[in-house]
Image 1 (cartoon, rainbow, N blue to C red):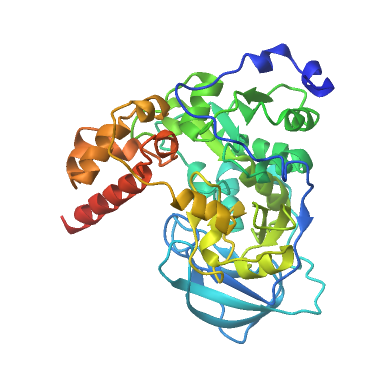
Image 2: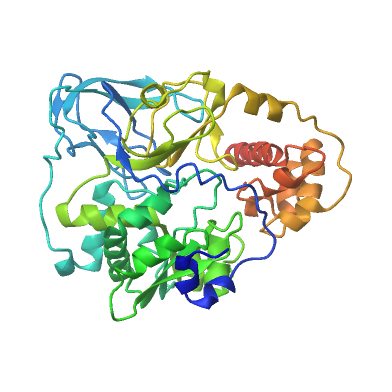
Length: 456
């Protein structure tokens, strides 16, 4: 039965663009999709890795014992492929030392002790007129915010604003699909921060001299379509469009195909076909931060799953330890049941001392029953059913790649079967009736090839 909202939307939303293949896992978004963003309290201690983005780590400009105010830069970008880091709270720097990360190896981090009696207002800002800024000034300003892709990739945003000179960007795509099960961070941002989202979109268009922009989301978020449409400029330069709900619709290649029927070439970038793609949360941050010369100090995080009592969408200071979040929201269990991100592409953590970083949009808390159910699945030999081939959005042959990986023939996986085109969405593993951990095989193969390339 269609709701009143669904009936009033243009009929074309039900004949939607999409991409070939893909899967339809259980969405499980109903737990938090209707819950407004709330503010999480400040932890007594924040852990701020200097490397929480693609590229070179930030360079610290503070020392132990130094007092800082909320929003103040505490580390600078180390070159173009790097971004600065800002204090998420007013407090004092205690240490700069190696700390655990979600990926395993410890990384150099700034430890900030938060002043408990402080109001925690942002005190480090300066108003400016973005309309008067040049393209180069916008790119520099975006880098100074410390912004990276908040959808998970953590790629420095300002780098996307400087495509190769022979690539003319005509369209900016704002990615609000959020196809990962359980996660509703982007959905709530589109609903509650639509004005900032549109402002950020206009800034990106100006920086790239793009003619138009399309904000794309899946058709399971039609309320977001209406919220954004109410804020769009009258000139028609920015539009919002729903695409078919399917995983992994949020991948930039899939979105480009669904919205514009454009195919980003193998090994190429969106700019090679005239596109620039940004996450909606990143775009909303730009719209909010550039006018006040602010820095990224917090982000919206979906905390959900059967192992958490107070599921919801929370504004969380960067550097907040997972342990503190779980204590606040009612968790009883062990660290092996925590996934940062979603169930398809997220990563398990081995320590509750791992902090929230800029690229982390979700904390999925599973119970022992959920973990045991998954662990009970036993891998069996491939039966050549072809389900993985039908599911792969990149039109690869996961079945053959898996066989080669099993034999450690990693070079052939890339040279003959385009291993690097795989972006590890997990669709093949999800549909495999033999429960073969194909994505894990592919990650090992890529890592081995990278290590070999370093030595050659």
